Length: 204
Image (tube, rainbow, N blue to C red; front, side, top):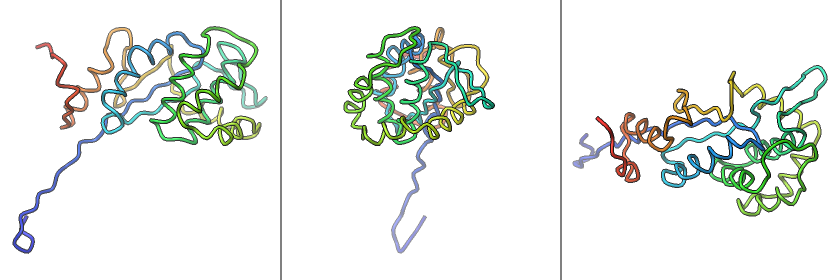
């Protein structure tokens, strides 16, 4: 295009790859997915390549009439899910990703009836540089906390296990596929190029 004697070019920025992870707290399979696949992929590729969203609800059952919720791993899971939901609501993905990843590492997996001490969540908030008083205010508000559980219940699609992961809307099999490779494939298919992806040796 000629503009006042100058030649200008328009560069099209390829769209990031949408990664939606539907998870729940205290779930060993979710922990393994975070630590073995998601953390490395996000650290290597970042938010320019990955449009990440994490939906902490999982297999919980919400009764709208009674405004009650039952979680697979007990009350501690419901409570930890709520802390994570508040983090997602109040922060951008790179920030809440670090918070949730910290909880996956620090909280004991499995069933637990008694909620974890608040210090676990404060420590992870400090690590992720999250405003803890604001996070606690969200968590401690009964009306808001129920609305968040309701919102995340409705955001969670039908699924038969967690983590339930979608890459550009397509189901990802965490047991058979490599998250980093699949994201690179999708990004390159959309016209993108990233130096980290060049390390992959594609099979014919």
